Length: 350
Image (cartoon, rainbow, N blue to C red; front, top):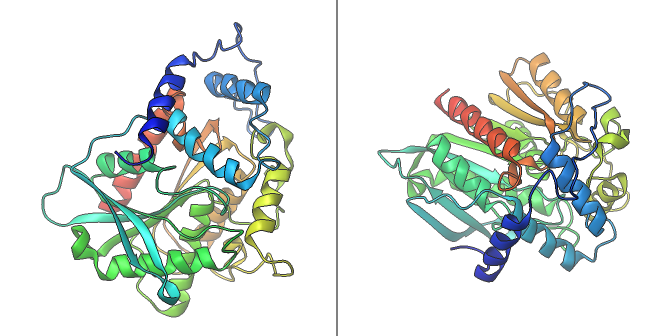
């Protein structure tokens, strides 16, 4: 069992104690999306009411060590219970400049012949997240989509600011692709994907690969990707969409990740500003409705379609940013993750 056993046991007890949506003895207030008219999922509304009451939504004020610990523990509490697989193994692969990149390899039961591989980049605003924080989602993706998932533990800011995460993501994808057989796969069926910051790194890796004339991923899976660090998309300004992803929190992510004075329109930082997206692989985009990053995902879809890339977009209109890690407490989030799995399986079957 990966991650702290004590943390997982504590999380199980806490998960069982949360009875949503009547956590305060009454149903949460109804919240309507100002752009789409969708209504926020009731269990989600109740959960964030609980967080606000406890003061746990101000991620911009938390000390970094506490922030990372809280993020990891929230994954244990909120995520689906670990899905059994044929094998889960931690390894280290060569990274840039002699640095070893930790990875976790998830092999499903359906291990008959060579399987597709998904190289997965976790979210966390470039400053938090690790192999444990997204363990539940990676297990579900591996089993449901019948693929090997290789999760990448790229270096985090502010200790390792841009471009460290980009360099790790790029190096990891190409090393895994070149050594696909050692993971039970083949080089021509290696996809890349991730959520939030991980979606950013996935898109940047594809763009860098194209520009370098290097082999491309067979598929991109972009789950509510952050694609515009300038914050210019309208959904970033809507208070109804904030929840824990407030302007202050996103500013913390940006200033921790991007060195002072660096152009935020650099496509390696904000891939939405790439001159062209022509030649990128087929793409599955999954968005949350109540998410400040929603419009960035929509604009990525628009850019890809304009440049002739095959794109399928799915929007979970009633859910919030981060829903793939909330399925243990929020039933609609678990069902939405099932739909992500279906889209990934279809994309890999291509």
